[in-house]
Length: 206
Image 1 (cartoon, rainbow, N blue to C red):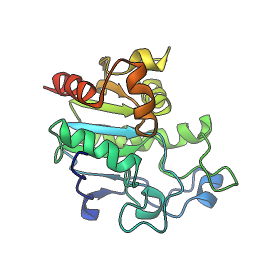
Image 2 (cartoon, rainbow, N blue to C red):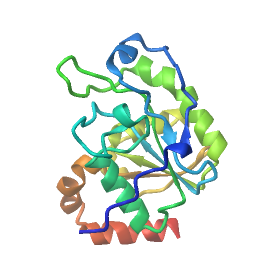
Image 3 (spheres, rainbow, N blue to C red):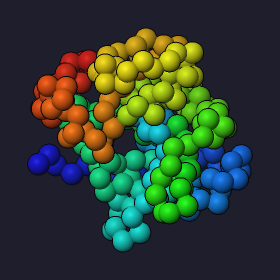
């Protein structure tokens, strides 16, 4: 198994949405706002959709809703950070979400953020992307890709066909990736192993 990634430094948290109350339902759901984290001069920005509920029993990798930092879950967070590190960008990536707060479904699990919630949070993502000014934006999963494409006036037609297909936009080159929760499921369906998937990503980022 690949080496475990380094847990992010809390001092590199970037609280662009501190204290936000634009979405009353999300304010009621969240424990903490899941702020972007990483170097603000990074070559890559990794964008997820929204934080999950989190894992209170975990030692460090408790998730953005509990740590206040994007992509810090035991499963998805470590998996994405491991992939990016293996691609050669361990210390050169900034992680954030299109929606900064946990969207609860009333039963302790995630629901999809509403269009209004996505729109309310979009200025924060724009601010982050403008500040970091990355060469490449990696979007993880269908919903994160859709959110980023909306910012550039694009639509997403068939997510799987878009995976590892770079798109030039006014916010940088966007490369959609599989959502880490479904990576193993879909890799084989795309005729990839993790190693071939990583090799192609490395080539795109070279």
